[in-house]
Image (cartoon, rainbow, N blue to C red; front, side, top):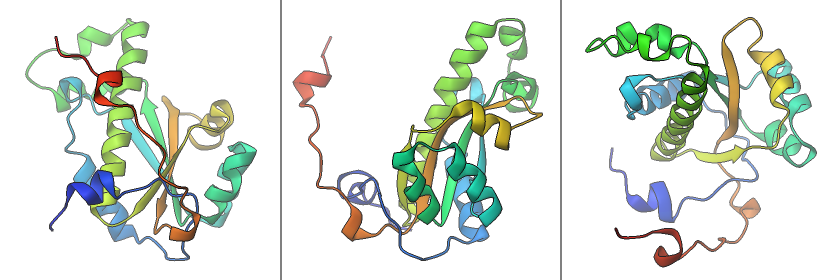
Length: 191
């Protein structure tokens, strides 16, 4: 598979509408097989993902979205709920056997919260890059009721919602004009 920087970054766009083209189980599994390799601190891998596409699950998800995002989620072939497992450290003996990394987190709620949020955010970004590499478009969103999403999709677990990202084949007619970016001098420093 030949992937270009244009496909991942410069030509890729946030999608606001979707073509009526399904995304297969095989593609979602391939997506995971790619994004799982992105680095996280101490290989903690706290992201958990629910790929929502069935009508009943989609209705539950739409009910949790802000008004501006309801149509995007309704129309998307798949919407990924990227969660963060607040007990990710329980898997560290398996994922990071080089040290007793679990002990770094037990009882340290501030470190658990910061590590889960930071690293699940990274994994969500890897998911989007993997989706683009597979020819899918992405529509990441923050407009939702996190408590309602947690109750609807993560009840009885240690997972909390980080963000939502619709996936599929984007409708080119619904892409906004490219928004500007900050210049290097505005965003970066050389020290």
